[in-house]
Image (tube, rainbow, N blue to C red; front, side):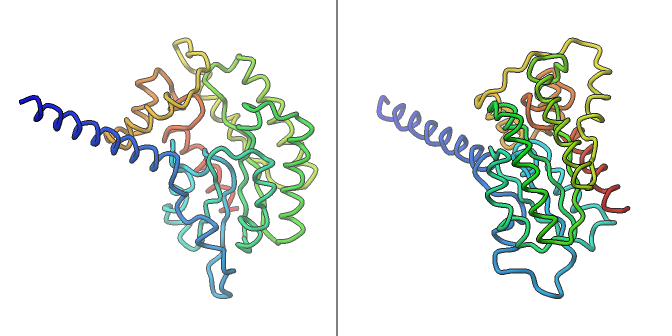
Length: 265
């Protein structure tokens, strides 16, 4: 009897570890759909469809939270484009600057959508350094391609819009807008539209307390329990963010719509 209990316990442990490993891979380990390493490594064929590159960090990669690039890809009016997802979990502006040639320029894009900076805010990257990185990315794309470029303002970090962290994030969004004006590229007001929704909250938002366990718990609910990102956010008392950082489907739809309208112009 005791031996059977040990066997059962071992099997349960193996199952739990396997489930945890699956969640970790799906949310944090797997690459985005159609990444540059697959779509652009060997160059683009002359007869390839026009390519749209979306570049950024985890909020662009879309494996933890809304996959707004995937939603953009699925819209009927966008079927003439190939969408390359150059989002990488954890990236800062410095990381994107290092891979701009391989992950953006190598794709010979017709359009480039850039949303980068949330991790810079969280990591206290100096504002001047962020400005330099973002300017270098945009200037490199403009000098090496003929692509249209759009810079997206950053989503809030937590739904407490009056927090010190979100006040700091506002200075980075100012840099994004200034960079777009200087480089004469387009600016898409993601932050502004999300804030309009969050200002309508009827309850006080929870303070920022992002952590890996919180993100892992959100991913577990989605990938193991089949809950939508909207349901995950709602269970945490949040309107748009599943874990104070990553967008739910409602929030991702804002970016999808802004990007779709921009591509259509």
